Length: 101
Image (cartoon, rainbow, N blue to C red):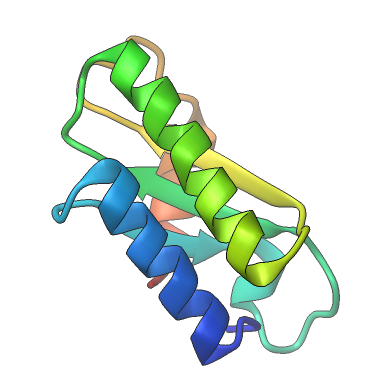
């Protein structure tokens, strides 16, 4: 995993604060592979929240917290929640291949 312990801790704490203590958080993509270089921080976030307004606010709060503490980074967030009507295959891929944070 190509995140520092400090970065991983910041991301985990921000996810718990924004989405709640039962959030599932995984790093996937190139940053999950120690052999690769560069790349965005790709995160899979699964929550039990269903309210779309709360989810949007939580996503913004999360990104603001993380970027304010680790600096400006390109972060791609895949948000999974129970009432999602369309489940693109990337959600299952990210969950299956992601490294838990």
